Length: 310
Image 1 (spheres, helix red, strand yellow):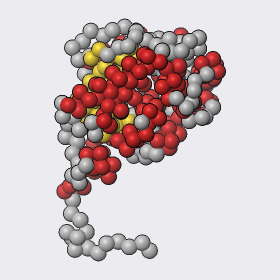
Image 2: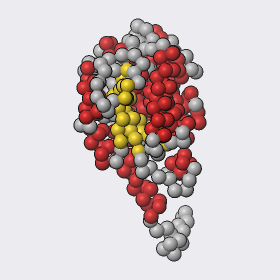
Image 3: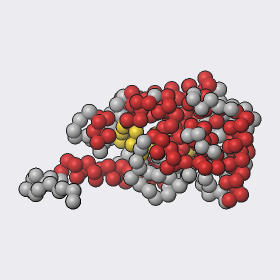
Image 4: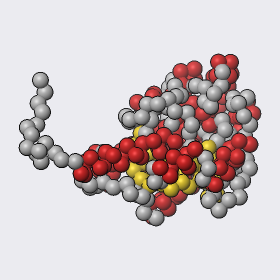
């Protein structure tokens, strides 16, 4: 609550209007066999988000949050009035064999995310939540986390949507081989993003930068959103003060990323859904915290002495 008040420069923060931006993109690394499904599922789920029938949309209705799907680079375009097209390319490349994207593409994707967030701010949204949809993006997020946190891939890589032990071992080998082949510069977050990342992560990183520039709080979701936050904070350390953590996800890198960002997440439920679902879980908690902050009687009101440590 203190962070939210600081972001809004007021003792009485408000989050009456809230938006969830769901950045959708496909990842070339899927060709390396790191997922249970193929890339076609990205477009399928994106259509469900556009139609308002996905899990996060159901959660958003309860949380009184408007949902905005954004195509950052899906292999298959989704023609729907609810979809905003900001695609940079139709999916990234397989980082086992070549950089996932060019540096220019990474810059363009970050800029697109920033511009989208600034547009939401201009429409009066007080807080912006970040979500994603992209098959294979726990692999790209884990690769980014490994480099940016200086941790071995085996320490930051998990089952994603539900790989078995053999699948996780294969995923770790792919990330190890990809990092060795791409040789990203860990001191240059944009270089790491371009070599190993995804357009969804780039868009979220830009969203955080753009929201901070417009003095809007940003809610960080699970490991993919947290990887984007690592990139955003490396690009502009001041962004850290605008970030609100929602939950500690089920992926091993989640807690490590939050620790590196200096963020504490109130929800610890082992969530793995993505799409911004952790952000939607946080919003009702924020509503209750604001209600208590603004409407509950204080010790002074009740003429009670303040507690003292014993």
